[in-house]
Image (tube, rainbow, N blue to C red; front, top):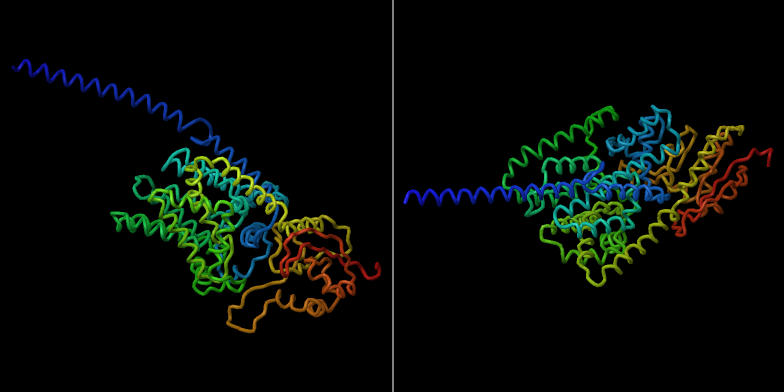
Length: 535
């Protein structure tokens, strides 16, 4: 009996050992295949070809965007960086009121400094290097968005999400620009990669919290988008106290300390710009000084416009995505609602919700059957036409005119030192960052009144009320006259007597837009003052 038991035990043990060995061999073979498939070869890891394609695409994107969008892409980034490195450049009133942090301009200032050290600080490199750097970050964000969906869902869905992302006209229009919103979108996508979605064990609290904190440093209103996701994470976290004490608190203190230190160095005093920014734009709602829109604008115009032909696929995708992604839809709606309470509204303010929306669009396209290819062609063709028009034609004059200004720095044959006055809505053009020459330049200023004076009118408004009167008062003596005037064609007839009397002659006419609006004309005119005895 004992002998029989020993035989049975040894037989079972041998079978178990053989089974383990077979599983081990199978596991080893599988891991090798997986290693070859996922790790791939090359510098960029598992998606090296996609990464290289994305980089090339965004570089092409960069060079096909030759138009202006908003003043902040120059005045709150490149102009400040130019001032930090080369010690001249205009700082707008926000910097005097401590509403802006130096962390974002410091990023571009580091590249300016390298160009200065290696004596390669030509005006063209100062213009294009920051944009190419932003293009690289945008390309990496595109790939990371693909990786997020591939990790949580499937390669098929990930491909369609990536397709939706690169086809989006507004993403193409904004992603390579040097505005804080574009950097916020990059950080949003990288943050999403580490976010712990419901029902998943993936995610890294420290990394995603650090990226959120950095996004808030770059643009304090980034906290609006992430509040629902932070609350959801905190709600589903079992060890809530540990999350707060060992993750949130250290990350928050560290990033705030870095921000305070950077601003202390450049402002010369301790200041919390994030609080000042939120207080001015959100709590006091002072942004309405620059224009206001009805409360429903984001729902009826803003969001549908930036989504474009993606909008029906976004709606369809909202009905298809798994339950764990509903928090993203909540974040999108929450952001639109919160921004709707602010009087001053812009398309770019809601740009950071676009990556979330692309996930829903990708789900929609992946689940289409008969109409998948026609839908893809529709997105590609429709968005391409908008991309080319907005990137190469619409609002290009304000950048083209800076090339004329650059020529004034090179031309030293004139008797008088060149000087310019931009008689345009404030901050219409870039400034010293696009000239890189300490030429005398002035523009119509428009800082808001922070003293509570109800009768306050800024310089730009005073000029446009009575342009001819304003010019005659401002330039009553010939010694103060600038050598060049730059303005939109809409005021040419109004100031024509001044131009004739003071000896100004038209030297350039530059196309700007097919859609003139109010103070913004279809063309930009450049006038040069000739000596009276040469007339």
